[in-house]
Length: 255
Image 1: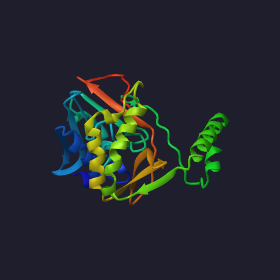
Image 2: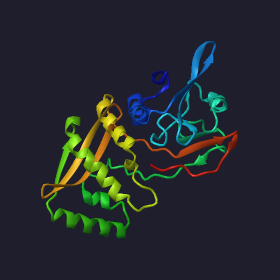
Image 3: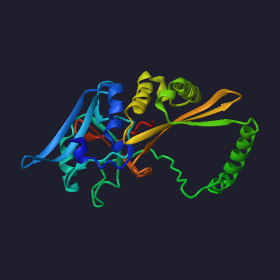
Image 4: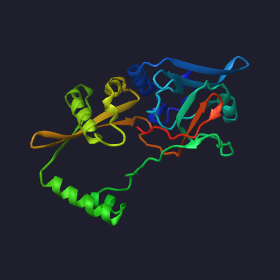
């Protein structure tokens, strides 16, 4: 059913990416199908978060660019009617909803920063896009790091990720320690998600960026690319929260 309704345009549209999260968290799945003349016309893939005790899009807080799977967007109100309660549906894309759709039951999600680097070919071109103060700070930091002769390695073989995965977890935990929101890697299941992502890649590919100074690993990042579109789409996001039939105004979780 997923493949029948998903556009597969973004990373989060791909079933294998969602499955990587499902395997790690193992929450019960609740998939709903709307039939018309015996044929599926809408599909609502949820799971039940047994810790928060509510229904979410399959994948929970992790996926972005969520939308309602309908052959006809006029069916969205019908899909909203069948959402079990309590529920919290995060990261809903407004671009994938009818322009005249009543969005009043929805609450704006937290904004995210997106930087499109298609036209920038040098670091100086990129720096022209930021404020004068930020440009000064970035140049100063870049100079300090460059003086240490860092080595940058791009790894695209998942078998070679393993020795750096623990560094990735450790750096993240240290970076967000004593902040208002701890690293997601405090939860061992988040590490499983990353491991699963590497193992299940097919329509997407992963890569790891490793930076070393004096043979010591100082930075690690894991990236993923959609093989067909190779693009990152940005939409204003909304989330829908209902509990015993009432809409609650509550901030969403950030990841």
